[in-house]
Image 1 (cartoon, rainbow, N blue to C red):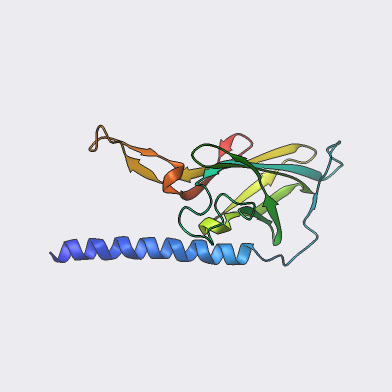
Image 2 (cartoon, one colour):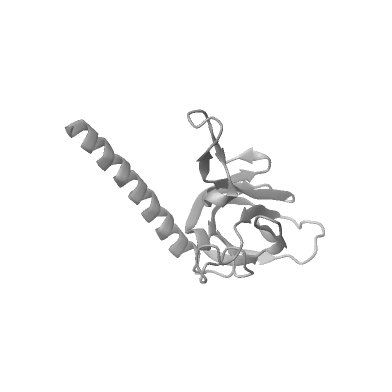
Length: 184
């Protein structure tokens, strides 16, 4: 019985610690403390000298608005993605596409910044999820950063003891990032 209680205590501590880290990262990442790290691009063009471009994209799906609460941002234009590079933050507004069972968002932003290694925080504030990664941008090139949502899982109805399947209806539980085609 003691081992069982100890295992539950460790699991609860791990979950709470993960939530606290994500919350602290979200709070720190949502504040711009610098304004000289990147420029937002409106049109392409050649990348000059010691600079690099970063193309950020994400496509994700949420439930329709008002399913859980009137104050819920899911399914509304208020649902945003936050990107913070070395202390400079930008909020991305997604384009919405209503579907029969939910709302699909497409986010995209092009940034120009110095080539080299940068700390990037990507967050979904409405879901209270944030991740921080380091990326090294190649000078004179367009670098790609793609966010992929990690959805919650549900048991498959036909075989409950078998595998679980992920579904946007279970909410976004995490963020996976791909940089220049490789998972980071």
